[in-house]
Amino acid sequence: MGALEGKVAIVTGTTAASIGRACAMAMAMAGAKVVVTGRTVAGGKETEQLIRDAGGDALFVRHDVTIEEDWANVVKTTISTYGRLDFLVNNAGEAVVKPIEELTRDDLIFLRLVDLDGPFLGMKHAWPHMVTSGGGVILNMSSIVGQKGNPKGTAYGAIKGAQLGLTRTGALEGAAANIRVNSVHPGMIWTAGVPDVLGPNADKMKPALAARIPWGETGESHHVGDSVAFLCSDAAKYITGAEFNVDGGAGAS
Image (cartoon, rainbow, N blue to C red; front, side, top):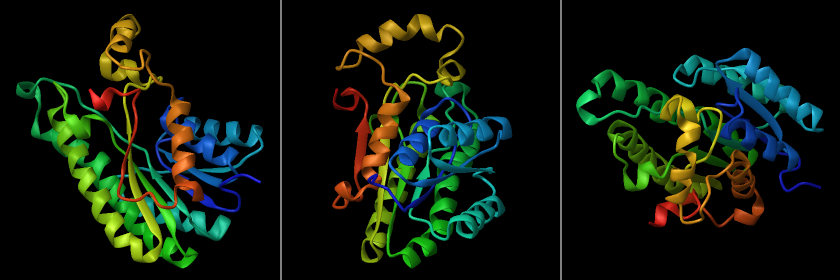
């Protein structure tokens, strides 16, 4: 029996070969029934099928995390399909990498809507169902940039820093209801979306980026997925309000 057997999860931002898909897969392989969400139907259906082909139970629901009505629908669908909700992984996120003089207020608003409002709305709508289930786990996908800053990441770091406040306060409020709330901080995880942030020459930059990481190599999506599955399990039941780094030591340098 898997560590998450009989439990039900929602994982957002799962429509590509990315951290979100890896989290959903790891949780499904640990026994959880997983509702996978995102804006791209084809990619979401692909994630659903990959989990089913591997022997897991998954359902894709189209979802824009910035729209509250979408959140209400995702949670309602989860409850009507599986009867409960135990885990929420707020993985969907965006990044804007620009020098500060090129950043606009619209950039900041865009990041706030996806990376802060989205997790807040997810927590709000999931919370009462976790109370009904006798507890649960909420994981907010952050970044080491939210902890230590990064050049050209002014807006992104600011929003991820605010997300830490959301996580810590949620942990304090959730303790009485057996709801654990943690943040997960990936470092340089090499996903299909890396070129979108670093540009078309991202692959050529990879060796230099790896050399800056104490572990000596960039991470893979399954490293984060495995950590998320652990944090949702009873093996992590005394961990709440924590910043859980998956970064090859980059956050310590």
